[in-house]
Image (cartoon, rainbow, N blue to C red; front, side, top):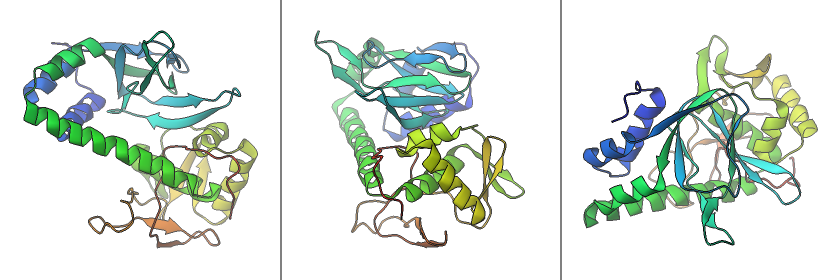
Length: 280
């Protein structure tokens, strides 16, 4: 059993695995056999094409997960925080080996738990059929929600992407401030541009417009989602059209920044970016 002290990310990971239907004994056996690695700020955790023989769980700090493009550009597909799993997406390379689909870099100094594929497979082989079926259903729901996020994100204007991305970051990494919700990560405009599939000048323009409409305020390289403007409300992902089992999240009026009911949309911490998306 790993003797490292419990971190918030470890607690959240335990809760996630339990939600997926894994027995507590299996969870303890899996999480208790990890290697904790500390990465300095800006250092790579893994690169695209590197061996996918381990999975990663962020215990402390923030990690940027990128999708590199053939033209040298890259899209920031996920900003992972404590409790998030990364490094599980892989592909079979030309040598018939499993390789990493994306690449990851430390945004801050971080502590990350490494789990070997061999140990994960050994744990899964010891589970009974009913537990495996519940786990398969949970993983199918997890992957389906990711596909839905990317698909709907493509239909959004750049303004909607940025507003919903900031709202999502506020829900995940924000702290209460006298004026609203302060985003704790220090994100450069280039990083926000990578998250919405845009250019830095366009992000600068959109942020200026949002500040003029009293949606946000800047505090150095941090942003405050001003209270009552709508961005400080915790967002929710919409289920596909026709589902009535969940309260719908708000939408943003591109003309005046006000909230309005939405029938088909999503909030974003992911970029599934089309750089040619229209700005309404």
